[in-house]
Length: 263
Image (tube, rainbow, N blue to C red):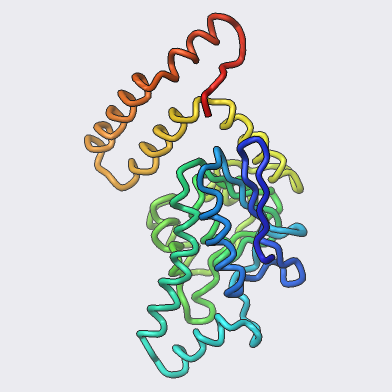
């Protein structure tokens, strides 16, 4: 399977698993990502990583990749209809990950390039090894990061920094990615998955509905003005306060025991 999945204690781990190509993305892997993400609905947290020390080296440009063969026809013929269909299908694969109702974490080691970085940008959090290599290199071959890379990176770090990375097509390591705000944590080489697992366990230990409501408010805040975002936050707060979870949370705190959540 190009994308493997396993779930334990409420945490689903998705692995891009094509190590012989540094997890380069062919059509099977894109569709595998979409299927695995859809199947992960109901998880309390999702981690996505790459096999064998690399997140993903990006689009597989070799002739045996049917996806690239289709794109090549659009390139050769200038066929906007085919180009539109290809981009929308791949965007649907990334969006399946972005639409999950639980927190998602990208654990980044090694190469995280092009479409690989666009997958990571669709997650709520990115934890990167200090030695990871991140970049959106599409303009080098006449393409753009059109699977959310332009939009999501601009939302994340601002238009100027996004333009810097995208238009120069330069690579940055985990340390610079952290300073720019591309990733939320930079960690020692080889530990990104371990740190992501620790964060996922912390998420699962918390009140499930409260996490879901808070996450929804955070996700929407970036698309709204301040007053609208505050209104969304207020509504989520009311729902959390009246959900029954605070009753168990406060009782557990006073009794000095771990809370027992219903789900």
